Length: 193
Ligand SMILES: Cc1cc2nc3c(=O)[nH]c(=O)nc-3n(C[C@H](O)[C@H](O)[C@H](O)COP(=O)(O)O)c2cc1C
Image 1: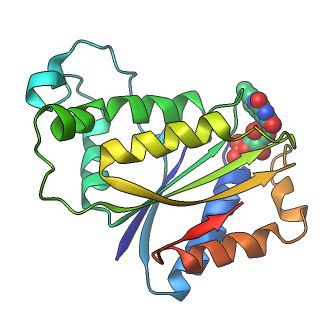
Image 2: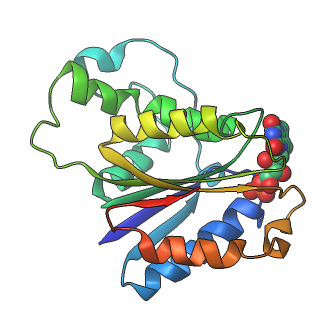
């Protein structure tokens, strides 16, 4: 099995990257191969709502999203990782999800994914604050984005209280939780609330 991990944070070596790397160590333990990418290394324009994909299932924009469409399509497992920015995922992450409107269109307008088995999708999210609703909007975005991409939302790792770069490593138990999350990926239920 091959996992694709999308790091939606623009901050290099930030908390999302640290967590995703720790998760891959758990995945390695259970023989899941992986491709961890920083989406900010890719040139992805936002959706322009031209309607082009409504009838073709293909996005008219020519940029690095073509690379991501292929990676998403060939992955068995998808992990989206993002920090919270104003109660949502980052703008860069949202741009990728909005561009999967072409995949949504293939599935729901054109019925092209009917014989495809849904794959397993997971969400990793980190916030500075401790608010009870801090992840609600981001979870909905990730869940419905994954549905468009052909992944069933199977679980999440949500971490509160990390703001400074790298500070997640000093929150007791969180790095171990990330490692265990990686090990559990691929099993039916991985809810790490
Ligand atoms: C533009 C911006 C908006 C943010 N909005 C929130 C927010 O609404 N709630 C929150 O708890 N943290 C917020 N944060 C803090 C980040 O979620 C936090 O610093 C996180 O650890 C960053 O992860 P990273 O190191 O992977 O980029 C915001 C940070 C930035 C830069």
